[in-house]
Image: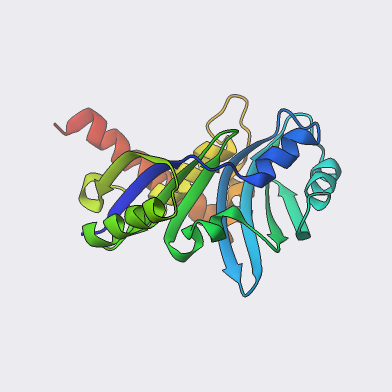
Length: 209
């Protein structure tokens, strides 16, 4: 049975450290999905920063060591989505890129990693690998797909992204159009998926035991 693991890894992302050192104290990486193409690591980032303009955000990331390319687009009032290519990434050294990552939420002291596994055996292999590398970690949650509820994988992905991007904030931090651009699908498809997901959640909450 497919498992989802939420594990807090006590290894600091160098990007966070360097961004804070640059003076951008209110910048927050809401979500990171790293990937690798040969020797280059690419981070798919969702970032919130009230004091940043688009130009300032690009300049901040371009000033970081090992960064080769940066591209961002605005999702909402203070939320941005983009890609950062660099020659080195802590997630590569930790072996995270080789797993089925959902996303990573980094902060000043650690990284909350959400990752999928085909079963219990693969999950335990991953944790053993962290231990062999002397990586300190705390397992926060393990759940199987049947425990996720009535949502489809796409519905859960879109709701997570909408929440992180500020779609449910008041005032709204990101629009349906911005979410559609981020995922590469039509605004109509996003809107319909969110409505269907909301209906399932409301039915489960109000009418099911």
